Image (cartoon, rainbow, N blue to C red; front, top):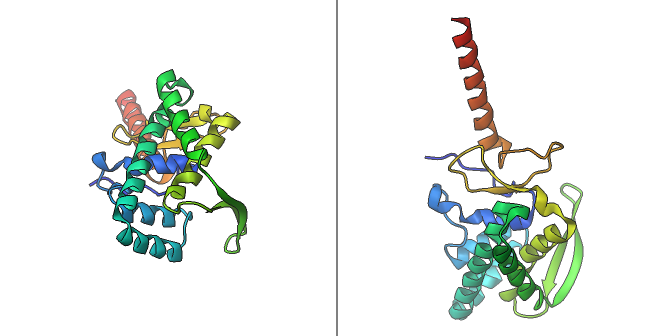
Length: 210
């Protein structure tokens, strides 16, 4: 069974969102396999708290069609963002335009209040969005805003797909000084890649010494 990878290690919210679809090639369940799973991911990412999650679950029972539509849209947005994340600035123009179209479609309906929140546990600050419209439709807005920020700031050139582990589909923001990082997370694929290089180097040295 593959080792579990560290959640939320991609460096940007939208990349962590893209990484929720790794299940087909790993033992971890797809976070968007159900509406409850989607809410669990949103809570784990800090986008909603336990009280709001419970309220949304109750509303989903009352409005199952709306909950299903919300989940379908989240999957649609994720599908549009993955090619952009995997190929970065080398993404085909058609795929780039499809991603931008999805981003603009969601941003076009993003009505609400944006705030800065302070986490006293570690002293960090983060932006939050309090929707004034449909609570279901607003769930994915912070994810899309994160993708928009990456495009506007030019960070897309630093977005990579993990190549340290052939079966790993994860994407990440490369913040290394050299810009040549190959693994999604040092605690999983990075450690395995280093161990493999060490074994290869040791083997080569033994062959030379014989």
